[in-house]
Image (cartoon, rainbow, N blue to C red; front, side):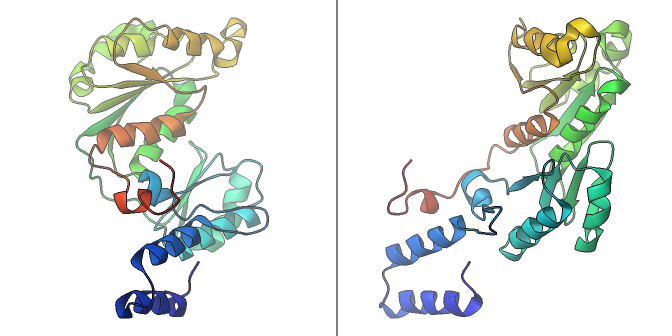
Length: 266
């Protein structure tokens, strides 16, 4: 990334006419896109391009690698960094980052502080059973990380339908519902027939043999007869939380200036 002196020189060149604005914009884009740590290339422009900053997948990376990537992202302007699939052992090593928080239930960690909710409504996370909480909490905390108000409705699976029906008012006031379920995955279809907002199904790998580590729930959700339902991958609470946030922030747009830079292909 450009240091303060180089950035000042670049902007001064634009001001005095010695550097064309288009050329300066291209240089800035190239700098933003190029992070190099040897073992990783942090994407400094992720927030600019998608509205959501770079996220670190913690599984398979050492704590030292995660810490270095996190520091590089924050040094280059990313206010907060989310780390998924993070083990408690690695989380303990990341305490050196200072303002680091770890949530063992979801296996999520983040550097920085959670923002104030600024979405258009509430994201409701409905979880079928206590055994599905790991995915539900991953979805809920991800949504909070991206600036959403979250309501949790847990242990409302279809085996006791009255438990879900007692929560219909909360469901009907949601801007987005994330339905998390293993076994046969029926919760997503049931909720899809009770609300007018988008429903995101998260199949979990919870269940006995014929559940096939979540394949039964996944196929059930994909074959839902309810309208307005979409489905993410098995156990992908993070993907559901990130998608719910985009739905709940319809004003979120990529910067046209960045997309129109010379050489940028739409």
